[in-house]
Length: 379
Image 1 (cartoon, rainbow, N blue to C red):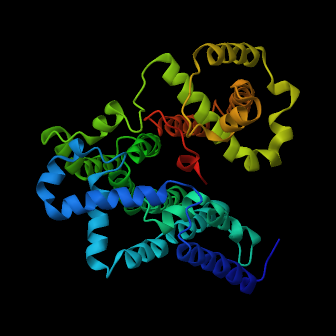
Image 2 (cartoon, rainbow, N blue to C red):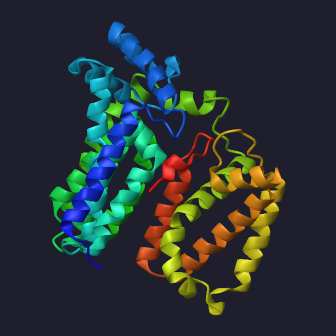
Image 3 (cartoon, helix red, strand yellow):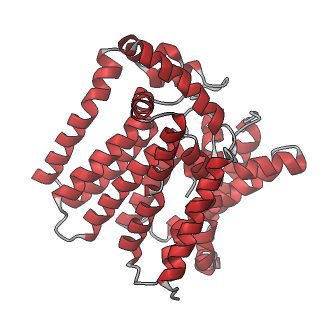
């Protein structure tokens, strides 16, 4: 199905204008972004007053789950801007790179034609309260996502090109490193990319060069955390943020696995619906699925204990809102588990299926702090 290019431009201009209107009215539909912005500004002031000591004592400041690079970037932006409004406007326009690179990624993956209505797919980003709030309130989430989406773009270029260009590998690695320096949890994706490159390149000079680039790009972080002993990530995870801490118990694992899986399932529904008959054929249901479901439900009932008033995902919130207990959430978690089992069962024997499972596990590990927000997995 095609759409006139003029109408495409009008739609994107309208959505851009809606961001400006949101900026004017200080929109924060995702809640918390404005307060985070004001909180981070206090730490920017500390860096401005005593940069070296603030940098070396960053783990003692307990800024929240952010990095000193974000605070430094925040400080730099304020220095080159006339005031905070200009700084926020710069980030708002910078954030437009996210839908742009989403479009470029989709174009590579699905080979859009001119005036193809699929060009409008990136418009979904403009309806995300997280994207909008982070655009308006200088959110670190958007800044990291910009670099991450550029990283994905160069990976898709590498994947599409038969020559497997080294330049695409380096650019993919470079922008992923930038994303990770803003939000450290993005470094987990390097595991996925390494496995992909290893299977493609084996022990070639390209793989060795890729490893060398990773070492060089990660050295400042390694030196900062392990040599200077400014381990702000551990300080955040173990000391806790808003009374939350890293939980290595079975209960913590069940919380993380079930909630993350349910959130990923929620965002996957539009992609699953066109193939629902294929996934849910009778021959796809096996005895192993039933046994695994019973075990999973048993573990949920015994060990699930997410009792925070924030986070948890839409299915958890619905369960609390409607029934005032976790039972409805257990059902959705069970559905989520079986949906992903059915999807992966068709391709698990192939190399791509293994890559997909690694990517799924990477997503599950993204929220290591014990609080699970939809914004982490927002499209």
